[in-house]
Length: 190
Image (cartoon, rainbow, N blue to C red; front, side):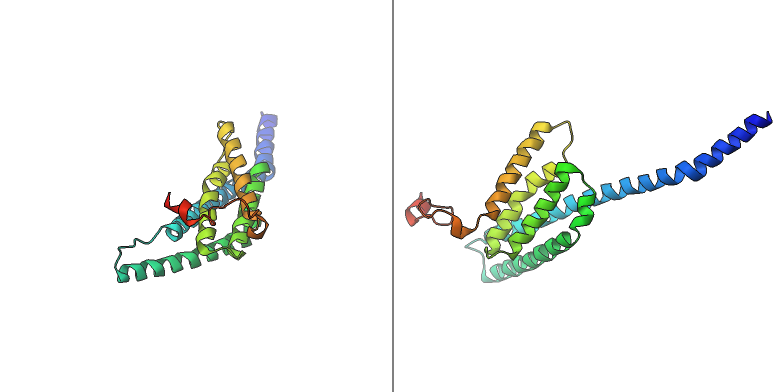
């Protein structure tokens, strides 16, 4: 009876002082990583909403007051977009820690890509357009599960293509092939 009691006390103390602290620390890391993943995806959606405001056309028939208000709102969202990208890029290591493998690479690649976009000579419209188009594939990659491998692979392929497009400077594009920016007047009327 005394042996059973001593064994129970020993096992209880061993679990309490040896195993439990590690389990609690692991639980905290898991919860922190989940919080960081949610935070990054929310920030990407936030950037996308600001980008949508920047790429939405101002109606031609809007009053001058409405146009002025919309321009001011665009300027506010562009400043918000830039400051949010700066903050995300500054904390890239924290966000990368929350992911593993391909998802970590995609998170870092996205953060570097959008930082490069806002530092580039592109117009605000082109910057916002690129931020907007990158959002869906990167979020699909970051939230991917094993249950949807085809969706993940398609998003990864699309994301790689979009990132490659942002890395090509406008000077290195061939001049004989018209780009979306260089359409002739006749093409734009069609």
